[in-house]
Length: 330
Image (cartoon, rainbow, N blue to C red; front, top):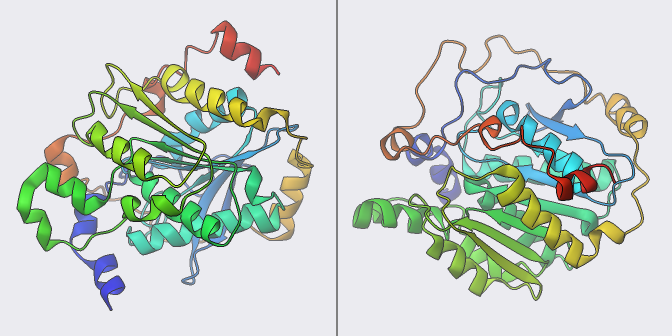
């Protein structure tokens, strides 16, 4: 009963601010966009970007004011500069499909995508890098804690701008009034169970999620191999994708030896065959795409100015840096 109340209370209206209308539709990104069952009788979109010769797959869980359309350029940069396969996961109520954005639904989508990668594509869990950004650090930490508790490992957990928990964050923002809400995405409780290598990236000047949240999570992480990268002069939204995100991830994965692992036996053809045979390329019928009539983002998001920047504003046009270009061409 408590879980049902939490997944259907008013807080979700404030917590999630899906772009409206959606920045992509059910026939966008042909060959890359596919549809997984949500466990509730519906389907949700994911993106898979294949990198032939890659040794790992990166799963990306985006921030609250993104959807896969806004994330697409960043996912391509991950693929090209990190030399990894990439899967981007969409949340309930994001993209063109109607839905209820909530902790339970986001976690279900995350688990379904992870099962697709490890069971359908047969990528071993220890070759999967789980990357969560902002609100996406909640489902990312939850997933890795479940995997580690089952005595399995992932290649790495990467958290960009994480929070201790939504309730703790709300207390920082609005004070004692936050005591009336039920907590969700409790990263502080989950991260001691995360024993896989962990990288935490945070902006020193982040006023939405203060850097102390990252410090607490780093201290409580159960990982032996862990790193905290605090980026000076950066707030919640001002990350330069290449310098502040891709470079630290690239260095961390190199230290772990991920780039020296044998390549996964995965090609664009083999991925397309799995998607086609499983009928995952067929989009659902959507009578009225979500947000077609327009709607406002969550009130709290508007009030505290947390609308996240598009990836095009993160310096992805600056792709000719020699050290990164060498990795891209590898």
